[in-house]
Amino acid sequence: MEQLIESLKVDIIDNLGLSDISPEDIDPSAPLIGAGLGLDSIDTLELIVLVEKKYGVKVSDIKVGKEIFSSLNSMASYIESNRP
Amino acid sequence: MIASIGSFALITPREFISPAGAIVHPGNSLADIPRESVYSEPYRHFGKMGDTEKLMFSAVSLALKGISIPESTGIVCAVPNGSLTTDCAYMQSVNEQFPSPSLFAATLPSSLIAELAIPFTLRGPNRVLAGNDQSAVLLNALFLIERGCDFVVAGYVDPNPVHGSAAVILLQQTETHHTLHLDLQRKDSETIPDLFGSIIAELEGRKHFPAIKTRIGTFHIEESHGTTH
Image (cartoon, rainbow over all chains, first blue to last red; front, side, top):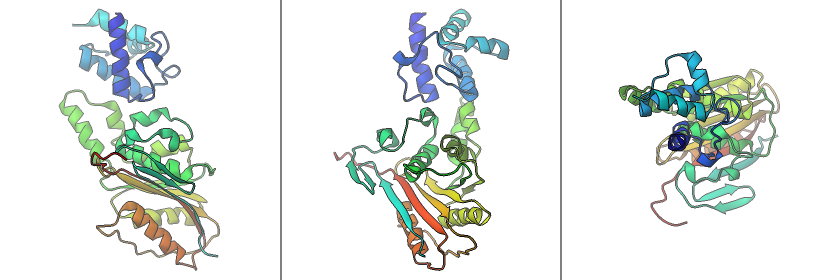
């Protein structure tokens, strides 16, 4: 799980162009959207694409999506338990 | 009264030229430019922008650096191929079975305007032009001024990956009811900073057109050819 979280930090920075942020700056328990990393709705869609493209995990329910992307910890947990 | 020139700033990867002097800087891409030299504060969204938006954002930052303009300021921007570069990148992501939402959002040509209007808080009327006729940019800006806009940020950006450049001119209405007829054509050998220099010269030479104050910011990428600067 720890390894997955570290990998996701790098993925998020690369995919969302967060050039001012380093992996150490990302708190796994902090909110990803709005506060914390300050991601917006388009970023959330990019995260959904990232999760499916790299980890083969689909996020098809928007209500579940809100919970999944509430933090890096919850995102990693969802991927871990839904990986093919 | 003759149109007065505010200040002029030209940036290349090797040097920053400003009214205060020049700063030597090595590098040959946007990523090499130390943002603190251009922007008053880090703008987190910058990393997400495409080259078109980055170039124009940088030029606008220079043009507006150290000054305050009203929120009613208008924007006019021109890009040679509109959003074609982004369209192609988006189609490539579609072909790879994972369409990019952020690229899709940027396939609207007017998204360039949004990338300027939001961070610089410019809420005036705006226009985006697809083409490489820089005089059309100026004429559209003057039209907005004619319609009551006191300030207009007008720019041209060429997102060429090697020799990309952007130039921005800030026009300020100082008087009203003046008509300007421009016949400016960009010569093949003329760079964008040269062209905007021509525009300024044109304005300076028109003593009957005193209504505009100008200020320019240009941002130009040049290949360093591996040399150390």
